[in-house]
Image (cartoon, rainbow, N blue to C red; front, side, top):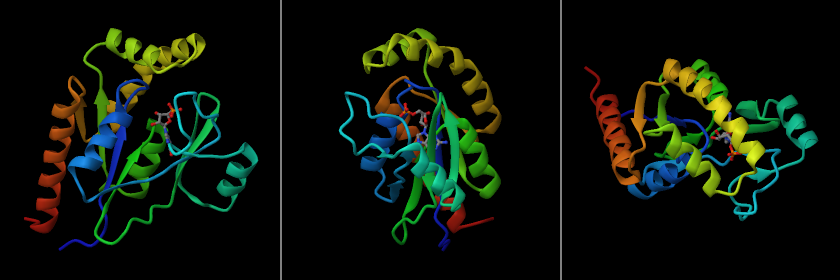
Length: 188
Ligand code: 5GP
């Protein structure tokens, strides 16, 4: 038996459907526990305030100074960070973060499983970004950084999963997790 929680990191460009896949993973895999991040970004009109702990920049910076975060990064002018994970006993940790944060996780925990989620095409990605109410300026910046994010993600990730269909992609990730837990139980 392996008592340490598995750290599962979902990365991928904005609009790729990380949030939707993360929610589906929580439904499909009861061992997963989603970490709730802090951010200095304003809530979107489509958000209800539970997606993050939305905090002022000075509160976030004070938390950095107290070494509160497991990882944190600045992304498009806002700060995002994962508190040190404290999952309930027996649960594994799911982080849905960007690539700079994922590389900090890799340094802290070489055994973390980093999954890059990609879109089947760029056109689909653009359509998804538009559909969630971001401004045109925001969408343009996102598309610019997407290629870089995917490129860095590929270097870091243990596996790449194409989000062509939420059920299929989530099912693929659950199978990967089951295989990994199995090999942690029975190391050869
Ligand atoms: P959004 O503003 O669209 O909610 O998130 C922007 C990016 O920040 C996304 O790629 C999201 O996965 C990432 N993100 C969310 N929480 C965290 C976090 O705690 N740490 C890091 N490094 N990135 C995060």
